[in-house]
Image (cartoon, rainbow, N blue to C red):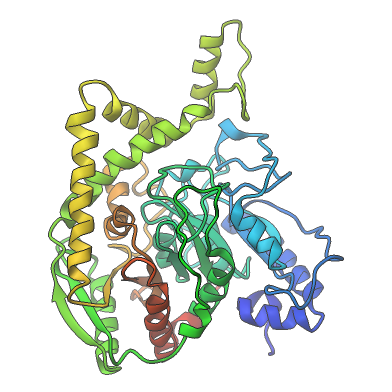
Length: 475
């Protein structure tokens, strides 16, 4: 293969590593990161001095270096959620997914930039500064896993991990032209993931191909007794679902997702993808998800309530930053004021409000009831269809700063991904086209809980049929 090693897919890199080429892969990635980091800002820290002596070339991942989002704990490595308040925080343990990666022979290349505490859709709220989209560095990569998506798109990482609370894997995957999977809630352990919304969060892969996503899911998925929400479902070999055949599949297009406000080129590309599936033998039909219009409002009640509860532990006493003062109460105020960014403060305040006496019933409990209705919409739809096809993002990548002072416009960036998190079902974003100006467009495929195999099968079929994933940004 007459290509630089940093361009290799995970499957290709594993093959090279097994033939003794691991050091060459690491060297190629080091040079690539050093060249592009000032331009993209995909990483917050990286480690090129890997100890490869104990790596087995016959292990599942064969030592291939992978990147992880900066909210996944790595023993002995600073982990900050891109926030000043966790500056200097060094976890004494590995997250479950890090344990699984290491057991599979992977090495950790570095930690990727993100919106602070995963609060954002643009990767602009990081205390390390914004990440830039490799397709157009004046634009955002999406968020909150923007650093992971940008690193993979720019070939600064072979593959990466992100976390998805309301679309934080799929939306940046769409804007950066890569593959991003949000597994079923409970499919991948949350142990060691610094929590945002505990009933929403899921860790998942960001990769160059659907096949790479399946390879990583074979490593990541499985029950973990340390996570009380971890599912005790058996884990299949996801790579066996990678067959080009959708002839028996029924795919639904929800009317509520093709509405005013959807970018015309996004609409056109996703409808063209549906037509591709039809030509390949799938049945396409229009379906209804009637409670979709309430999803953003519900999310920004329930998720911020959980965020407020989860972030209460960061007060300058046990973790990270502490502003020294004479009084303990003053220390709390000063540390939080200095440590949290504007968006983090906004969400903490909103969450504290909806949980406060007199408002809990009016907001939080009512939000949970509507969440049940949104989940019911999906379950009823899956009686008619096997998969649901939608745009991932209502627009392509927008300009850096364009929505920074308009929280509502920013929150609406996740309008097509949030319902999936509210329902706990799996979904993937894969590239399905480009705008006239060359920006990537992503489509989302969602399925019943624990039907990742079906998602992989359909996504792989489309990917192999169109070859869209082969187009790279010109950096």
